[in-house]
Length: 171
Image (cartoon, rainbow, N blue to C red; front, side, top):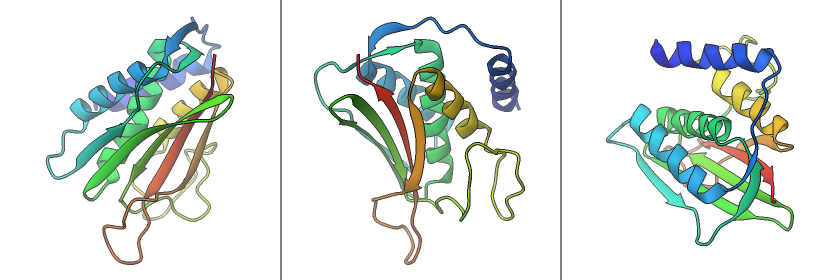
């Protein structure tokens, strides 16, 4: 209940024109912090969390509080829905840095839309608040949140896990 209350508080704060305090910061260290927080929130011994964050610094202009919150919510969701593994990796584009979170869980239902977290989704757990908050935070950072299918091996034959990409502009 505390986690849900915290997310609802974040949604309320986002609704009233948040003032972001952005600094040029290393995305790799922020994502390391976020994965540590998510792991503490969703400590499942049967799920392995792997990080492929690379080396060196990769900068973006971010509000550390909000980016850590957004990334840790996405990773916590992956840990919650995964069957056996979650992979968090960083991929660099010429002008962007992608934080890609993949799991081997059930994936997203057909027609899932991050922008409408309260739509009825038969057979789907949760409200979709975490992804909606993350999407809002990324837009405020001139980035975007993308959803898709995981490249991890399926836990069950015929299933495909989820992939969530947090895309930020490089500074």
